[in-house]
Image (cartoon, rainbow, N blue to C red; front, top):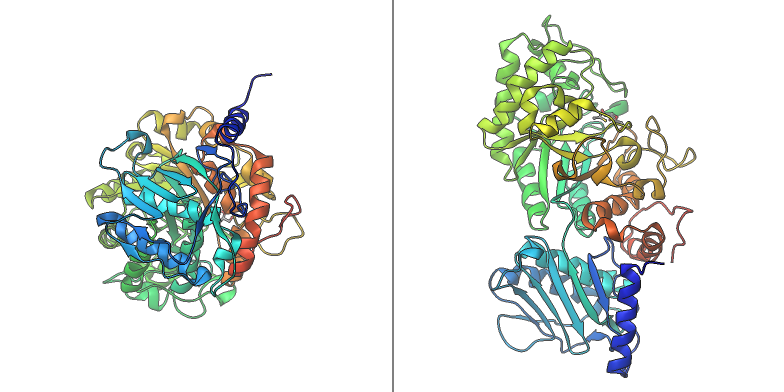
Amino acid sequence: MRPTKAGLIVVAALLLTALTGSAGHRPPPATTLGSVIPVPAQVVPSRAAPFEITASTVIVAAGAARPVADRLAATLRPATGFPLPVRPIGTAAIELRLNATADPWFGDEGYQLEIDTTGVALRANRPAGLFAGLQTVRQLLPPAVEALSVRQEHWTIPAGVIRDRPRYAYRGAMLDLARHFHPPADVKRFIDEISRFKINYLHLHLADDQGWRIAIDGWPRLTTVGGGPGTGVRGIGGGFLTQEQYRDLVRYAADRYVTIVPEIDMPGHVNAAQVAYPELTCDGVAPRPRIDIRVGYSSLCTGKEITYRFAEDVIRQLAALTPGPYLHLGGDEAMSTPHADYVAFEQRVLPLVAKYGKTAYGWHEIAAAPAAADAVIQYWAVTRDRPAVVAAAGAGAKVVLSPADRAYLDMQYDLLTPGGLHWAGTIEVRTAYDWDPGGWARGVPASAVLGVEAPLWSETLRDYGDVEFQAFPRLAAIAELGWSPWETHDWISFRDRLGAYGERWTRRGVHFYRSPQVRWS
Ligand code: TNX
């Protein structure tokens, strides 16, 4: 039998223990090194005694490392009750440092964590890497670290070395605010949760047939009519974001190294906009407001100039509001737009995104337009052959994998779980975990894959508890597909780490699905 990498690591660890001997007098750690989601790229445990955070622990960090150190201290203070001062210089038990001598292996988001009995050294090229390392440190501490009041614990971190970096640059989650609006406070809670798993993009689906959720200057009725009370599925999902609220969300996410990707879906999925502005239809007659969940019946009038004035106003304003690189124009399920009109429409609007300094992004149907060669294409098909996507990738497009039968968080876990749809099948945790984004879309080379995203459509999600139930634990599975090297992919390992993680969700009050595939601690 060929020795596995994991096997070699264990052997190395045992040798190390044999050589260094003592297990020390400290209590054994509550977690093992490597019991982290997403699993780190390289883990070398040592049997040396763990490091223990105590009342006298000091954190040292200077310059751009300082904000991450402050965040680390702030996350550890409530449960430990320790002061954990952060100082610019000095000897410290916990040190965060940005590398003077950059090691390219770590890139912008990688980090190295060295833990021995005397302390913790966290190093990265960039603050985003320190932030990723901070998420790992949290998971290496006992689950009681999640408590909001002081707990008596040995706050140990297992000894060893972790070297880690992401497999993909794009690791996303999507939240649909159109079918049911979810207020900024809930979006922030969601950002808190996803950033723990090193998700770095949050795609917000801001408009659809049932509602329009972002204020656009010059088009006030989009939100007063299209986003007001009575909009949304069953008329109970009303609400919208002002531009100031959107900016605040962008800042909140950026503080957690999450970049927001706004989406306005066009030329289909536009009924709410057409109720507000009937001139966006071909006959100028306002359609009736829709609160059902059918798709494919609405289309912008691709032959009217006002359509392009509208699209450009929206694109210009969203680009100005969005520091991130991507602007998503939807493009899915335009069943009421004749194909030639669809292609002509995309040929005109996709370049507008570049005109305002952003990279266009769209659902895989946009691959039919040559302009998609400069875009990011979101693959949501349940089949693995999409020749148009292969052609676009060959012409330069990047692809984000969101196959609906694997990555859609709005699919039911099984036919008995409440909430969710099942048009793409049911998705238990193992189904969400056991696939490889790298080789999924046949004919799309691995080099064209930018990453992976888990979309959460909100037809059935009335409140934030519903959001959590659909997202967790499956989002953790998608996060691991996006971050961890394929060589580490192992369902049994993931299942066990997930089972141990459950206690952290429970302590935080996260309403997650207790899948029977997992033994929850
Ligand atoms: C299909 S997949 C849609 C959405 C629905 C979703 C429900 C895709 C790009 N469009 O309009 O909300 O199914 O699962």
